[in-house]
Image (cartoon, rainbow, N blue to C red; front, side):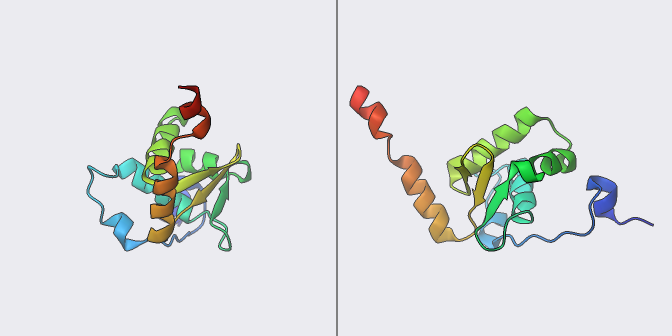
Length: 121
């Protein structure tokens, strides 16, 4: 008999370390779908640096597990990025932030306007 993870995603049993403060956020701050994506990526990160690479199958794995299309995944990714829970790393990479200090620093960086745009205005 196969376990639930194999039935859903074709993978063996996987574990993700997710900070409790993320799980305790109200739905008004973080949608259920974005939370599920965050959990999947927490379970797919490189333990040393928190990086997830789409070319290593993380994106297709998330699409398969969540059963949605690429547009939905991008929307949830944008939601996580706006909250500072992830940062883009080049074209194919993502850094998953688990420490509250890292999230707050990313939020501060996201709040700083791009100098190129502000000088052009």
